[in-house]
Image 1 (cartoon, rainbow over the protein chains, first blue to last red):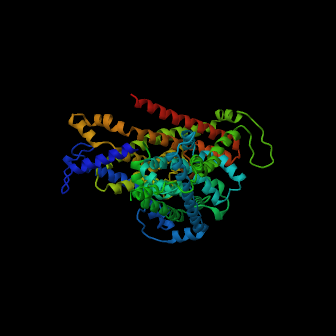
Image 2 (image 1 turned 30 degrees about the vertical axis):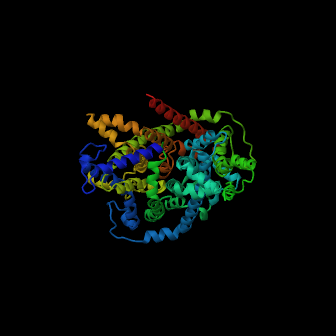
Image 3 (image 1 turned 120 degrees about the vertical axis):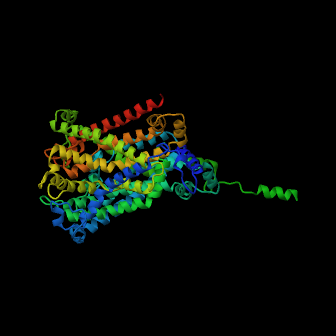
Amino acid sequence: MSTFAFKDARNASTSRSLTNPKRRKPAAQPGLFGIRSWKKSRLVMACVFGAISVFPLLYMISLSFQPTGDILTSNVVLIPTHPTFLNYTQAWTENSFGQYFLNSLVVAIGTVIITVIFSSLAAYAFARYRFPFKEAIFYIFLAALAVPSVELIIPQYLLALKLHLTDSLFGLVLIYASENLPFSIFLLRGFFEAVPKDLEESFRLDGAGSIRVLTRLIAPLSAPALAVVAMFTFNFAWEEFVVALTLINSPQNRTLPIGLNFFIGEHTTQWGPLFAGSVIATVPSVIVYVISQRWFHRGVSLGGIR
Amino acid sequence: MVSKVSTSLEQRPVVFPPGAVSRRRYRITRIATPYLLLLPAGFLYAIFIVYPIFRQFDISFYNWHIFPGVHNPFVGWSNYIRIFHDPAIRTAAFNTLLFLVITVPIQMALGLFAAALVTDRLPGRGLWRALIFIPVVTSWVVVSYVFAYIFAAQGGLANAIVSIFVGHTVHIDWLAQTWTGNAVIWMVSIWKGVGWSFIMFLAALDGVPRDLVESGRVDGASEPRIWRHVVFPNIRPTVVFVLVLLVIGASQVFTQVYITTGGGPFGSTGVLLTYAYKQAFSFFAFSYAAAIASLMAVVVLGLSILQIHLTRRNDNL
């Protein structure tokens, strides 16, 4: 991890010194693509990639503003010709969609809080303390990365039955949080280890305990990693489908992904309200991504993979 | 005067962490602290992940009934034997394998290609990065519905495009046929997955020392040779990491299949987990489903260890 940071810094400094601040000369800029660096063709290809990446989502937004007749016609309607808000009002009022939205929000925020707190505590123990079986315990945590979510749904369902956690949002939070712990602990440990020990020593000398060191020193310095954990966890909980589908029975406890399912009828699908609901469901994930984007990309390039 | 100075020095506080009154007590807290820190995460993890893993194995050896008070007979390995005599599961296993073999390499290739485009100061780099990553943060459910509509028999985009070429309106039900249904599942998965490998490879490529690349070029190495001998060795850990996680992810494919085709027609687009899920929650064959899931977990874990092992051995060469 530290080598990565070092390489980044070195790379940045060389390219800065080689680059004329007024006019960038491509010839002076060493890159992966030789001297001409293919800027134009790269730009065209990037446009293609970007367009393909967003097209289905833009199409979804367009569909959500189209009346049913336009959605079901055999002609392609890319831009709504008869724009309408009907789908949104219908989606929001039918099927108590507002309730699902609220449920999803509660579950996602609850999962983020529990995951961030629990995984920070554990990662701090792994990063700074020496204790018997430390690495073995760490690998037990990591092993779950190979056996995640859907595969354990049967025993988790039986367990939830026993603990009376079926049909409960709290049950969802607990399961989601435990599924997010391994990756979060793995990521945070690397970041916490990178915080200089001298800083912690001076905190300790001022009489700070472990929790204070964690909250006042290590957490602020590891903000990018915490943002990554929070974003991943939020998105996981926000879009999780199988566990919610299996555990939740009553309509008032449905989360958004399950709620969307009910626009699909036995014979006819209400595409309009479905896509209006989908847009509503997508907006929070995009907002969370945009907010955490800065830290997120720094987090990925600094840590994660050694 | 001198003595006064010395006393004031002696009175300088010896710093003890408050609460650590004695050295012994300080040592005890020092030993207990890591375990206390691990406790919340460990507790949750043990109950909701570790216990279910063992429970799953346990259930797979019984003929388990969900209803309380019913006797659950021990049946030994018979659930596992049943897996190998079940013709329906062969289709599911084949589809899962096909899904893995098709989606993983394509995702990695496209991700690496896109990352190579964007690294090295492409104008609007942040924009491209965000655009290509956006599918990753959208939800599987939503994305699956969008693709289900695009390939719907009535009003879908795919049919509209085909209609233009054929010259008359067609109503192909893409999702109701085996190969087109499978192809749609692959398409959704690749489309949504590329952004993730892209972002991983982008971080790795940014970390490749450019002066090394440049010196190779000065020495007259061709571009493919530079990629082979300079760039690739530098990003190998990321390639391994991405490969392992994508293989694990591909073996777990569920949501997009469940929503787009539902595994139909007649299970021909089903994968292992949709099959197991149906066994458990439609036919209440919990033990059989648990046997399938347990076997899969063992295979995937073995596969991951093998992948890591193989690539690590290459490192020493």
